Length: 143
Image 1 (tube, helix red, strand yellow):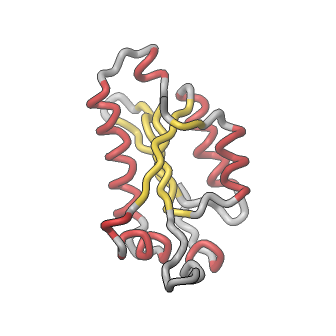
Image 2: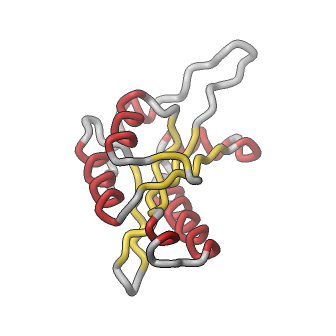
């Protein structure tokens, strides 16, 4: 997890006609193999995504992107995505941390099993560099 805030990631989104700002979206990525291979019930998988999102909101509560996102709480957008395995979710977390500037996120590790289950990315406009990283780590819409 990165805690570095940068001018690019912490600035207020530019206004668009009508005075509204472009929507920010929080991406929540869940390991698909937990459902398909490990036979986890859907309820616990939903809980894992909720844990990752809630932890991210707490950790980055003072980050400008999070403040912008939660300010209009009635219109918060989330995208639920999947990645195939534990290896791909761990590698995704590493890649997000190594970008310049790092992309703030939180990898939820379920305890006491010490199993990474879900990852949440700070609200953003899904810039090209993020899309490339997600694509490289086999992240796609949850199906």
